[in-house]
Amino acid sequence: SQTIHQWPATLVQPVGSPLSLECTVEGTSNPNLYWYRQAAGRGLQLLFYSVGIGQISSEVPQNLSASRPQDRQFILSSKKLLLSDSGFYLCAWRWWGAGTNEKLFFGSGTQLSVL
Amino acid sequence: EDQVTQSPEALRLQEGESSSLNCSYTVSGLRGLFWYRQDPGKGPEFLFTLYSAGEEKEKERLKATLTKKESFLHITAPKPEDSATYLCAVQAAQGGSEKLVFGKGTKLTVNP
Image (cartoon, rainbow over all chains, first blue to last red; front, side, top):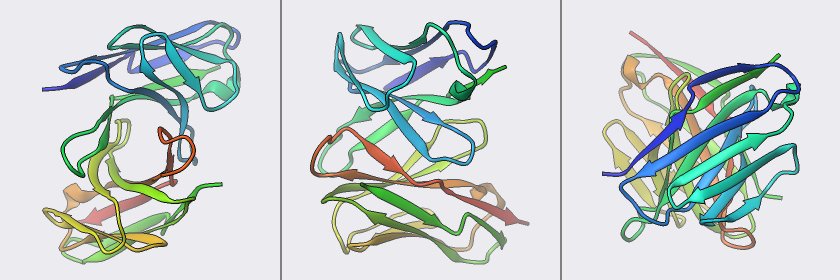
């Protein structure tokens, strides 16, 4: 069965420090992968998505970047964190399924606090 | 711009007291509407995908319905374990098909 791993679960970082969040998917090949952010009082916001190795699309201009070095690995990075980068970061992959069973599977999330 | 509005923001029910959550949406051609359940500190858990007006899907005590402007998540005889935040999202048929636009969610509390 397919599983998605995301780590770390929580992270406290000072302003101006770098960031690296990793997500890996098992049990599938060539998945569409996504990074979402959930800020307090706001809906989930799509940050990046990737349809293949080295292919990254950005939805929101910010000081974050994403990379996909391997088929089932998706990394979210920042060179210098801002206070506004605090939030709950979620990795997801799309399962097309059969018929009308398309869905996004989400990881367990990383709670990032920038102080 | 595609938008999703969920109401109410919070809902408290007694165990066994049925109710409905609303998701109103504005989208340039609906490709799909999704319902998720999210527990505190965890990632959203998929519940349903609806594609066309009139479609209905059920899972245990939950039933999702879809019209051209809104979706309802009906909860029948809820139990305390149904307490969670329920998220609604839409995907547009036009433009960037990879983007799901989420609402802010409805926080449901079911008291025993």
